[in-house]
Length: 306
Ligand SMILES: C[S@@+](CC[C@H](N)C(=O)[O-])C[C@H]1O[C@@H](n2cnc3c(N)ncnc32)[C@H](O)[C@@H]1O
Image: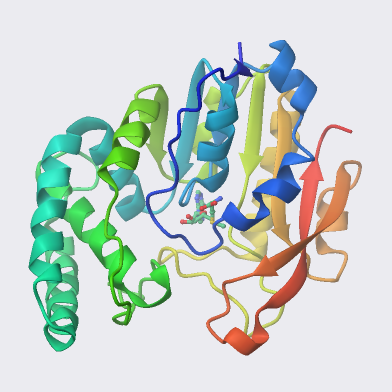
């Protein structure tokens, strides 16, 4: 059963991720199905848009599930989860090599080193088989973690060809990786099914003892605020409609479901989720690169329970 953990597993997100929910955890936790999570009705956890996993790690610190399933359409992200689970010692060797090469350089050399790693990462993309685990995934995962912690704003953003295109971030002494945390993450992932693909692929993992958290890419608040480049595919209004069908399908399966999205100030989500509980939670949106435009906007929280 999903019982309250006696010991905090301690695992935390190991990547900074656009749309990450770290800052909303306190707000969201008020709307979790706490009784069902505590009394054993819920035994499984499913998160089809895992991203950096802020909610996944947070919930797994509080409750222990018999089984978890996570997925994301971003194949680069998914290989990192799989490599941490399967090859952490070799990953940490790669990270240690990158970190010491980076640390011994002056700031100009650091920037050149960052762009050299980015170039190699993008060049190698064509030769990676994302469908089958290979040892090449290990270096690629080390590169992703390194780039994520040394790039501007800690984003993972790709261009139309799938090339990582975030510029260098001028941090003085960025933490590149935390081995202690990666070990906790690896231990937690042992019990987790990790799927690469569309959210619908999680369907078979859901039953009437499952809690599902859905955190799709935000529906843009306006035409200029969109961040849809986690992957080349993007997430359109018709994907939001597909997701609403999926929500209803999982509801019929008896799962408890929570979904978050931006509040577009129109009736788009009210129409899609008519009949479910819709709340507005104040949120500090961090996605906009323009600091002046960051601010408090409402986040929608939709649940199929009270
Ligand atoms: C808002 S982010 C999730 C953030 C995550 N909750 C966190 O705290 O870091 C949305 C994620 O959905 C993924 N995504 C986009 N389209 C998808 C699809 N069709 N199926 C599954 N995942 C998708 C993106 O790659 C991105 O990682």
